[in-house]
Length: 175
Image (cartoon, rainbow, N blue to C red; front, top):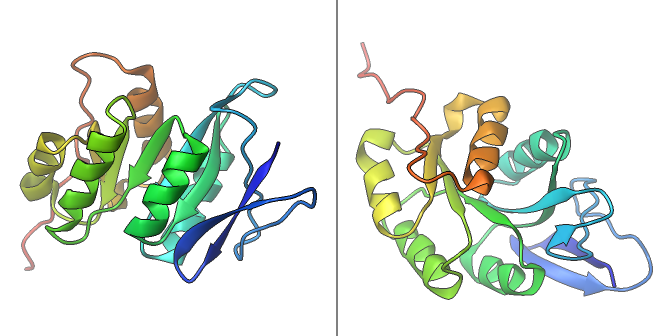
């Protein structure tokens, strides 16, 4: 059974059916199992409020060997439903405000073995430790770029004990 994902009103909606649906960004997304045995790709689920960021991150991930975006959500409610249904290998989620850490905490509570990589524009010096305390497996700032995002996802999937992704840099004071 193939499950295709469409993003509607910033929520992930799974649609069962024979036809191949595409999301509004032209990215084909499907799930055949937790790990797609046919092509050996790990399923990545993206959570970001900004459609452009979801699309850019999905492009980098889908262009990398061994990884495939299985779904995405622009909000918390859609993310919880889709993660439960799609059973991805990893979730990549942004945090923009302190209460977004509650989403990470709850996602970790519901899926304790699921790696969560926080990909945020918030200063790592402030939020990285907080994110890890509530259940995130790693933290990257969005300014690191697509290659480092893919590297971070692979590092989280390898589940190397003690491996920590160093934030590329913290924000410098305005001059």
